[in-house]
Length: 136
Length: 136
Image (cartoon, rainbow over all chains, first blue to last red; front, side, top):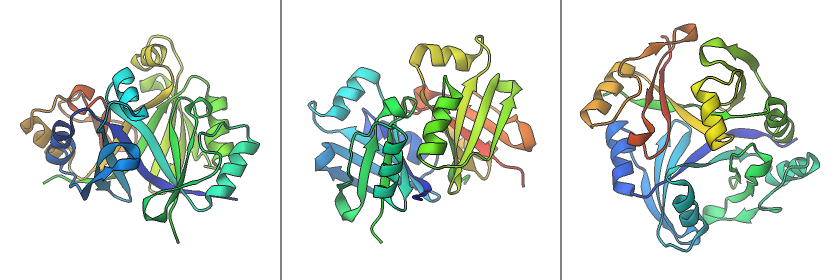
């Protein structure tokens, strides 16, 4: 059976990247590994590794994306948790068998060849959960 | 300088523990290590280890706690992220020097001798952050 290996990242939606970095980087001392303009998500993302996971600070760069609307509606804060799995198709199949509603029924291929899928928060107690399978 | 070592846990506030476990345990296949009645928090907590971190499912057991009021107001979902640090006093001092507002100015000693402190979400971009120092 497919297995969850670890928390890959926790994504935090932010309205002011410099101010938020001042807390995570300067206050908590977590160094930023890189800053990336993720065109597909219409966002600027700061990656801050913590142990075997990362904090991702996500700042929408346009006003017309799902993320910017979410930010407008709910304000800044935790947005989703991403879990690394060893077999994303197997995991999605098992979730479907348990009646879990998926946002992505099949994996989407993202940057670096990693494949991901989102689970609908309705099926996850209000939590937006992303699954990752990293390329071998 | 004090260092953040890893994500210790992500806490999820739930209104129906069995239904939520059906997703995390049966759907995602994450085994529950234990279930604990945490009297100090007026909550029942299910612990689900994932890699070097845990998902904690927190169900308030009374109607008069801060957690139950939060659940009533905001609904179920992610509640806070807990980071393990190597020196909690040093970290709190550094945060104060950066003007970060703390809920606990000095560490609180919890079960098993671990010491913890919460940072105010106002200073952390809407995220409730808990710091842990585990006993040596």
